[in-house]
Length: 289
Image 1 (cartoon, rainbow, N blue to C red):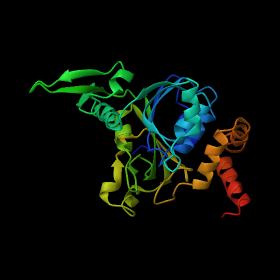
Image 2 (image 1 turned 180 degrees about the vertical axis):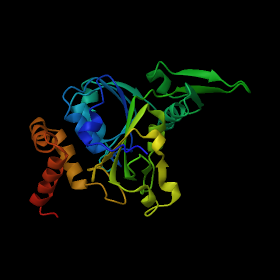
Image 3 (image 1 turned 180 degrees about the horizontal axis):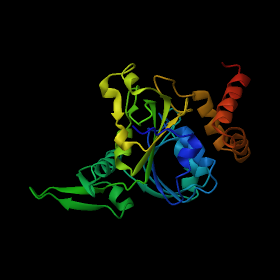
Image 4 (image 1 turned 60 degrees about the vertical axis):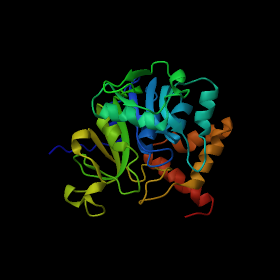
């Protein structure tokens, strides 16, 4: 069987400007942050369409000017309601946006994962969502007089997801409380890059969880990246919870240009090992272990 493992930087080397990138996770929960940081290290990667239930992935990419168009259901840091970088980018009019009700967003993923052009859904009818998304159309049922929103499938070039465990072939496992639709992202995309806390032998995938925790199979995975603490500073339960102190630092810095420049210099203008070393120093300076 094919060994699909790559380094973080090699994994994102195949991404191209203008692509549509789907990013898994939910708000500030199990986001593929190591892959996002690797994207930021590529100065030539711009003009992206990002499809996500957003958190700091959107904030970081928006602050760096990498997003042209954002397709989303929300952008939140969970314990902090709004991501300041995203809010500022919206207020400055820097993003083309396609905003959906969360149910509509997931239906767009489901349609793409089933290789359908669209799926009908009641959500959105009678709301301002169609007015804000002029390309949305309605369809009538062939069996009754019912009318539905025809939610279009998301056309995703590459999906990025982070899981707790994976084998070298790309079988992916989550061990936390929620899959966060990462399986739909993987099935919807033309290619999927899986970052994982730990690569384990296939025979050990059930050592920590039941069969139901095997989120998607290797047939949907193009690349595997072993990235310990690769979701930091978001959650990756049960391996670790959200780094609330660091998230507050991120959100505070994002509100001040000078503080943000220092944040970028300290935490983002470095490789992944440098990032985690800087985070360790941040906590040490606060007297935390």
